[in-house]
Amino acid sequence: MTKPGNVAVDQLRSIIDRIEKLEDEKANIAADIRDVFAEAKGNGFDVKGLRQVLKIRKLDAQERDEQEAVLDTYLRALGMAPELDDEAA
Image: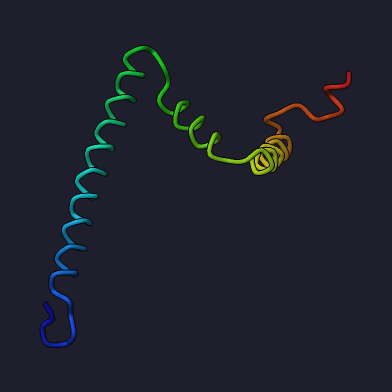
């Protein structure tokens, strides 16, 4: 069925319905994830640490190595990690 302006109303309604359904599913999944984090916290796990692990696992090995190298450089520059020469001693 087509209305003025060549908008396929049935197709538009279907698209909107599908998006709404997916948004509901997304909200349910987000609630499930919150529940798992709450369970982990209740079992003594650090939620910030878990989130960091999840973030790192999304990276490929090269990206992870690059980020670790940059972080190491910054920590050494700020005196928050031993210098490379200090490690050899």
